Image (cartoon, rainbow, N blue to C red; front, side):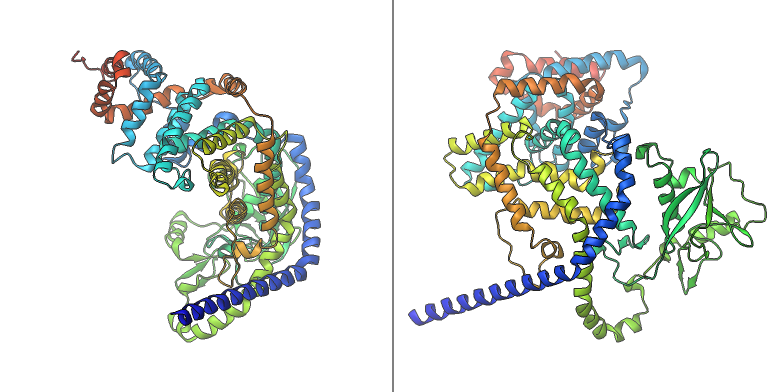
Amino acid sequence: MVVVIAVSVYCYWRKSQQAEREYEKIKSQLEGLEESVRDRCKKEFTDLMIEMEDQTNDVHEAGIPVLDYKTYTDRVFFLPSKDGDKDVMITGKLDIPEPRRPVVEQALYQFSNLLNSKSFLINFIHTLENQREFSARAKVYFASLLTVALHGKLEYYTDIMRTLFLELLEQYVVAKNPKLMLRRSETVVERMLSNWMSICLYQYLKDSAGEPLYKLFKAIKHQVEKGPVDAVQKKAKYTLNDTGLLGDDVEYAPLTVSVIVQDEGVDAIPVKVLNCDTISQVKEKIIDQVYRGQPCSCWPRPDSVWEEPWWPGPKLAQILSDLDLTSQREGRWKRVNTLMHYNVRDGATLILSKVGVSQQPEDSQQDLPGERHALLEEENRVWHLVRPTDEVDEGKSKRGSVKEKERTKAITEIYLTRLLSVKGTLQQFVDNFFQSVLAPGHAVPPAVKYFFDFLDEQAEKHNIQDEDTIHIWKTNSLPLRFWVNILKNPHFIFDVHVHEVVDASLSVIAQTFMDACTRTEHKLSRDSPSNKLLYAKEISTYKKMVEDYYKGIRQMVQVSDQDMNTHLAEISRAHTDSLNTLVALHQLYQYTQKYYDEIINALEEDPAAQKMQLAFRLQQIAAALENKVTDL
């Protein structure tokens, strides 16, 4: 028996040593690769800074395009919903017959008063959460409606959130797994906390963290657009994401074209494009340049507002479009047209005109409507820069499978080098953002100090001495619940459009931020995800920043309940009038209607609710809203 144990221990020790050696070897290889691209990164970073200088000047002149409070909260709370930007909370349109509107609005104000009864609201939430069909998605949406409905009294909202949070904590403590708390948004209170952080940190985003985040976003966008981007596969040569990396080497050349926008009354504008860009990509770059001083929401939409650009070529004026009769065919595949396809050269002039005011010459090459329709029928068989690998001839694929595997193995290092090059170029922007978010001291918003102290108090009260548990709570309540969401969705706070290829790189940085907030050490191996390999050298620095941030907050002067309530009251006063409060109340009532009997029963069984006649008040509201006679 002793021999078996000894052999097991030896095998484990040997395996650990082997893993450690592999870790050190991979770390050394990564450092070597980073060293090999360092000079290129410095040059790329310098070029990027020079090229972004004009845009930085635009930022100083026009300001960072931070969304107003209502649009920000609409996007954070409701854009991820199933209806997206058509959600009634974003459109603000209530489908109520005009003759009934005064009665309905009066009843909704009475419903608002009912929600301001703590006994009613706690019963309401508990009853909903006890219903099996009240899904996680419904809980998230309900919590967001509640946030808007109670925005006028954020002190009360915070009190409800604290009460529900203490109940949730008790459940996890009793179940002896407090580390799992706040890991997901599976309860109403968890989403309420997310929304509370979003509300309280809006001004901080606007005044402090917004600028480095915006510059990071612009730097990624600029770097991505410097190289080829496959419009069909959504892959780019310059990216941080290995799954979004354009594997094949694509020949391309940068061009500067002069663009005349008809009816805009401006001179020809120089626009940097690539000869491998599709016509749609060119239009986007033109609009980006022409309207860069205006918020993105004010830009004309490329598809619905603009005709295809046309080019007064050397022999014949020609309308440029993604697909036309000249498109290159390969079997059943059709290649999307590029500037190279039309032989547009550096220094060429392109003319862009609005729909309905196009002034192309009569002899220009145009598709007939029927031909255009036929071309678009096969859109699912188009390709841009690289043909999808699974669509290549099956016979060739089988014959070349072994060689393909060898090739893939051989070029992995080349791809990693390319990722490292992009990472090195963007490093300063990433560091600046992390520092702005994880800077302890006077810059910490009062809500963060207040809630972190609350978590510390609860840990002490429940005799939770494990620092890992408290660290996880704080991480799940702020960095993962708020910052990661904003980092992955810059359009939640800025008036910008986020392309998929930019989103892919932002996801890698967001994942790195998440890794920095965990105390778990990740040992590198050849199977490690590329983002962990990319930021292997920096992750220990980032982890220390997080630890120092949490320690710094703990040492700050306490934020009293009174100070926090004053701060919340200021937010309520400043922004409540801009929100669709009445719509939120109407949507909340739908849940009351759906679970009416269950809610009435819960209220009738609760002594405090009985004393205040809450069930009777709800029945009166129901009678007014549903236009029916109450049975009381």
